[in-house]
Structures are given as structure tokens and as C-alpha cells.
Image (cartoon, rainbow, N blue to C red):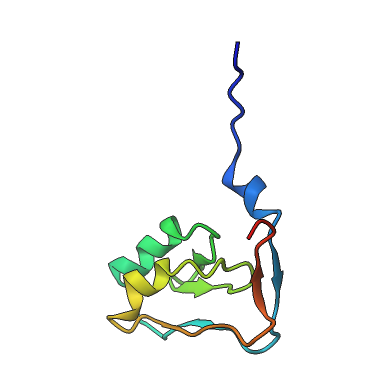
Amino acid sequence: MKTAIAERIEDKLYQNRYLVDAGRPHITVRPHRSPSLNLLALTRVCPAKCYELNETGQVDVTADGCMECGTCRVLCEVNGDVEWSYPRGGFGVLFKFG
């Protein structure tokens, strides 16, 4: 009998490493009075959970731990909510398994 092993995404993400480029985040959220629907969606769909709604109702980003998957670019870069660039060489996510 086969036993299904359920793995959580957090367990898999834990195996990756991230080299922080202090003071030079590769993602920034542009200032906004109220977050757009796409910014609010990022608080739910970012696989690394880098986006969160703060106590003042603004969306903040913590680029540490970003998997550079491009979800934020697809949702928000076109309308200007997010500025995204590749991390400097040697910084960013280091995938354990490729």
C-alpha cells in the first residue's frame, strides 16, 4: 500500500537560500494612497509571501526570500505598482535543487 506524503510549500522553500543585498532591494512598491486590486492580489498569490498589507492599509514588500518567479511582474509592473529588477550578481535566491 502506498502512503501519500504531503509536503508543504514552506518546507520546500526552506531548503533554498537567499543572499540579501543590504540596502539594495530588487523589488520596490511605488507609493500609493490605496492599493490597487493587483497589489492586494499579490498579498495572496506571491509564493514566497513577500507582500503584506501593513497597519496603515499600504502594501509593503520584503524582498528577502523572493524566489524571482515573476508573479509580481505579471500582475503589477505594467500598471506601475511595482518596480522590479534582477538582483546584483551573487545576490538573490540560491535554489538548492537547480
